[in-house]
Amino acid sequence: MKDRIGRIIYVGKAKALKKRVSSYFQPSRAFTLHPKIRALVEMIADFDAIEVKSEPEALLLEGKLIKQWKPRYNTDFTDDKRFPLVRVDPREELPRFRIVRLRKDDHSRYFGPFAHSGPLRKALAQMRRQFGILLGDGTPRRLADGSWHLYDDARAEIYGFPESVTSQEYRERVDRACAFLEGKSREWLTSLRAEMASASERREFERAAGLRDIVFALEKTLERPRHFERTDPTAPSADEAALESLREALALAGPPRSIECFDISHISGTFVVASMVRFAGGRPDRDNYRRFRIKGFMGNDDFRAMEEVVGRRYRRLRQEGRAFPDLVVIDGGSGQVGAALKAFVALGLDPPPIVGLAKREETIVFPDGRAPLDIPLDHPGLRLLQRLRDEAHRFANTFNADLRSRKIRESLLDDFPGLGPVRRAALMDRFGSIERLRGATAAEIAEADGFGPRLASELHAFLGAIRAAGPKIP
Image (cartoon, rainbow, N blue to C red):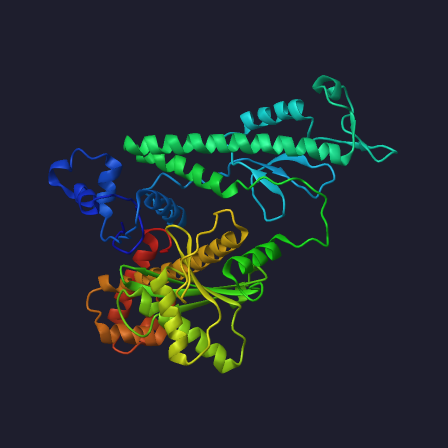
């Protein structure tokens, strides 16, 4: 929901959208609404609607949009508090269990997030007794024979573990503690999912949404169990292993060290844009990201849009004499993949290997008649494709939001009387953007074709009133 100058003031969801929205405007309910809802209704001037495929997807999108736009009438999802995690760094000779608030890409292992730090600290203290591990405040001391003296007090005797251990013996303790911790995390995840489903069935949507945020964060953070081993500088990295596993799964000639992924984004056929992201060596190569406006047609046709942007990308690479990527990934199923292949055929180009990643089942689709490929969700190659697809989706949606925000800003002039298309074009020719126009003086506005001092002064006052009415337009 938006106010008259285009600011997003509320984000909601509903199975029956027309019924839900119309309920706000029934005269019989006008005096029964909460004062906050009455104030919201009085400010509503426009709507945008986004259709999704399921209630869980609606919950996720609602939370994402509220965090992005921070509408003044939404109270959920606006808390940026980070839940505590447990971090264990396998590169330490004696890995410790530390509580942190931020997950970093540092090759450490993370568990959680957990709801409360107090109970988590107690749980770690109990784990120290149960497994003989070190927490963040541990001060072990190396002995002459290379083993380690873990504690400088009587804790070892209390815990019932040998005081002196080798690194390997200690890492065996760490493995057992991690298995325990991950099991507890997964038990909590199962419980949260059940609680979220129950709240949704009872139509307690605010509670379900709060639980949803925790479930989503927990799912993203949990990792597969692995043993803690000393770092071997000659061993292949996780990125290289993922590339090799992807090569095997897709029957490629070599590891796909350069991958480009395409995604289409639009709102009911409007603001149609596309993104292309590139990964090199299994990691984002952001300097080579690209975004596209659809130029060849108007309306909602993902297949035509995909054919257009793929054709534009590789026509340019051919013109510039640059190499094609080792793999092209399309966000979508057989239709989108077929459209991408059609672009290469139309250009008379030999395509690199192309696959699609269908979202619903995370199925890999081929353009050459091969049966769709389903590989385990924890397969390193599939996880790499998912990261690539999600990054393309994020980049496309960001571009789409930018265009919509620009359109919202430009629509401000619709509320100013007497401003037809000729004068509007004159303003854009003179100032180039709404932002520059809003910063102009009345005398500068008067320099635009079709504007005299009086009309320029009125427009300057109008824009000033909007600027003073509230926070910056998104």
